[in-house]
Each structure stands twice: as structure tokens, then as C-alpha cells.
View (tube, rainbow, N blue to C red):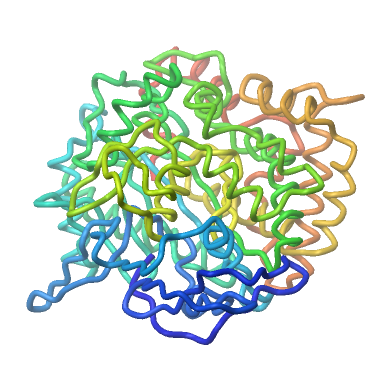
Length: 524
């Protein structure tokens, strides 16, 4: 969230949910100041269906209010201090539901937000970039291309320009969170502009960037740790809840797209389609077959890692297919996901494993008597990692990072399916009789066998070809001449050969069983 201005009251559309006369209704001024007003609909002001204030895909570990220093702008590290949000009354569960519902937007205001991560490495040694090099790179991009700096204490941890932000993942993976854009042409232009700027500074430093889903050469001990407080809490907690959480933090890269919905019913339809088809996206974009210099037995090691990172907060969310599913049911799920942290007085307070329900009741043991604000809720939602994630938009999270053409193909695939009513309905018809067991089977087998995974009477490749046609048809009906962005993965669906299998063929042949050439093969 960023500074929010006053707006008109927002009534949740009747087809999306019944609006209960709740005690807590919000007027937004400065940041989120909660005031208690009784009424029959929720006033969420600028958090409503007004695209002007959409902060579509700026992660909550991103952007807060800035303060000028001469011509330089320093943006405070987020989440913000607790002073930014003053609640006159404790939040209720209804407020948390209304927060999600406030994401509803009319179709003309739907946007595309793309996020992608990449590995920086020293061109001579292939070693991961150290924080000192990342800091120099961020300062260089800021000065040369007029980005505002995001600081955490004395450390630069990201950049902001308009509605775009650059942030650091735990092991220094370099992430662009793009602005909410109208067309895939704008999205791909944004990707190209970002890569140009990064390369312009990085090449002078002897730094390259690799587009792949899992670090192919180096062990965890070789990966630098970023100076971000929330990551220290996660690093300590991860080994308690799974065996692969540190690999997820330090050695994976993804590309994802964030997409809008018009109502609760529309959210449910898109959520179900996204979850059912996520294994197909994982297969089409599978691009992580190496670990520490050798084949690892997977086509998408990145996807496999999520199966044993923290199953309290990851997975395929079978309850989304329940007839009763809606915003409230997702809130119930999120409330039961153990917390990581609370941010107070410019410090992260370790709350790992504790309950947000207790926080709502003022019974969070590290800060007894304190109640959450909407920023706390927003931050908690960012610590949940299912294959599709709900915030005030839906995030498609199943794809490996890859080279730049695939960065444009991933949003194209999902926009063609989810932003076209005909293609979306055909997908829902297609998946209507898929069982929970079949969806889980695909989730678990695709990281190993990709499009060659057996499914019913054939292979997943055959389903992927049908889905790819629906995505293409959906893009054609949008009328923006966007179907070309699918070319990069249409060939994968046609042949059934994933990007990872092509890399393995090179490894066993031309590369002489060395992974080092991958740093040139997938160089941005």
C-alpha cells in the first residue's frame, strides 16, 4: 500500500457478496485511518474499483511514502511504521473480507501486472552477486535512470519509479514488479526497458543476469544473504516447517502475472481456472533442471521445492472448489496460516508460527494488547504462497523464471484465458469433472515429467494444446494483436518438449556435461 487519497464510498457489487451492516467502515485519508461508521455498505474510498489508485502488483515489501532530499527521493522501507495506520476500533473479520472485496473492478479497469526475478552473477567467475555489488547496481540504476531509492536502515534494498518497483529476494534475486498495464504490448515494452536499464549498468560492473527457475551451479552456502529484516525471520522459521524452504528463499526465480476480477463470483471462476491449469503453466515454462552443477531429476525443481517448503501456506487450495467458496472463506484460510512478523517502530517483530486470529483479539504474545491494522493484514497476505494467491487481485504463481521472450509469454497465456469470458467458460467446462486427486496428481508429477505426464486417456501435452488454443482465441478477441506473445510457448505445447528438456539435451551433448554454458545460453 502507498499513501491513499480520499475517494467516494464503495459498495461491493450485489453479485459479488451481500454487504452486511458492519461496525467498521473506512474512510481513507493520508494512509488508512479507520473510523467507525454504521452502514449497509463498505466505504473503502480509494481502495475501491477505481483504477487510478490501483497498486496492482507493488508488493507490500515495497513502497511507502517518500521524502525529498534535494532532487533525490528516499522511499522508506516497507512495511511502514505503525504510525501510518491509526485504527480507532479493532479490525473485525468483516473488515478483512471487505479489504479483499475492494479489489473488484469493472472490466474496463482490469490491468496486467507482471513480476519477474532473475539471478545476478559475476561474468568471470559465475558466482552470485554479493550485496555490495547489488547495492552499487541499485545506486547506478537510480542515478542513471531516475529511480527513487528504497532503504531499510542504511541499506538500499530496492527502487521505485511510478508504479514500478525493483526489489531483492532473500538471495539477491533481482525482481521487477511491473506497473498495472492495459495491454501485453505495454507489458513486454516494460520488460525490455527494465532489462536494458539493468544491463546498461551491470555490464560495466562485469555482472550478468540469468533467466532460469533454480540456481544451476551454486549451493546455499555460496548465496549471499540480503539485509532485510523479514527475511531473517523467515530464514530461522523455514527449517522448522519443511526441508526445502531455504532453497525456495535463496535459489529460486519465478515469473508471475497479477490479474483483476469484477466481482466475488468472477474471482471464484478465475481462481478455480487458475488453480486447475497451474500445472500446465508449470510444465510449459519448466526451466530448472540443474542443482549444483548436475541434473536434479526434475524439469521444474522450483515447483518441486514448493511441495516441501511450508504446507501450511502453499499448495493447491482444494477448498476453492467448494460451493461455499468466496472472499470470506479465503479470509478464514489466511487467518489460520501462521504469521511471520509484525512491523513496529521500524523493526520487524518475530511472530513466526503465531496466529493472526490472536492478533485480531489483541492477544499476540510479542505485543500483547496491540491490534492489527490493514497494513498488517496486507503484509500477512504476502506471506502466503499457494499456486494461486488472492490479494485485491489474483496472482498466478506456477511458472519458472526464464529468458525475456518467456517473460512476455506468461502474462499472455493467462490474459488470454482469464480476461476473455468465452475462453474462461470453456476452461471451466473442461475442468468441471477434474477431481481433487487429479489436480493434486498433476501438481506433484508435472515437476518431474512435464507435458509427458499421463492424464486420463492421454498426456498432459494434449490438454495443454487445447488450453493454448483457448488462450490464443481469447487474445484474438481482445483485439490488441497480442497473440504473437504466445509463440514462445506454443511450440512447447505443440512438441511436448519443455525448456528444461532442451537444456538437458544440451548438457548431455554440446555442453559436455557442464552447466556453465547455461549462464550464456539464458543470459539476458
